[in-house]
Image 1 (cartoon, rainbow, N blue to C red):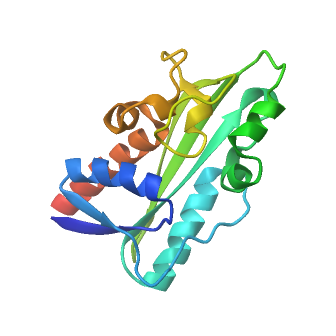
Image 2 (image 1 turned 90 degrees about the vertical axis):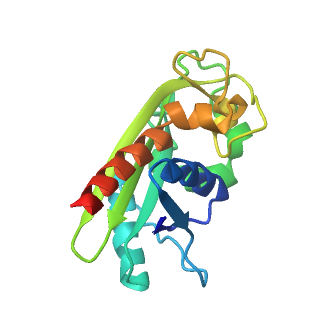
Image 3 (image 1 turned 60 degrees about the vertical axis):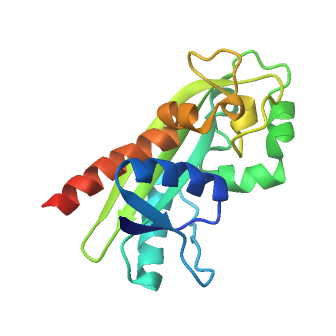
Length: 190
């Protein structure tokens, strides 16, 4: 089985991506020695993800992937967006729900950008899933903002109420990683 580094300390992301990687005969590994992702402040997930991939490659000198994801809430003008990784431990799901208190427009989307870097290129894959912010937290599975987000077509089900396979089939991260692994598998066949 082919191995590829995924630079993350988020075990939930790693578990989701590893499950998808296995579908393509690829095994993901986290870097040893505590090497981590370095995030810049930027306007888009693509900028953050691509920069982080180049930074990690310069340190590890091995082909790798990095992802960056965000929750974009329409009524909050896209907040937390690219700052989701900071907002989650700072405000948490309860803080987002307080910000949304009394707001009728609950439209939101999750976006994920996966960036691959090796000695010759950086290639990025972005996907999103539309939905809405729920009025309360629901579910015990998933991680991050999953308990307050319901994907379009799932009405009252939060992402935290979905089994991993169901979530991976529709999520922004699942779609972005599948796009990447299809490309990566094709690239390595030639």
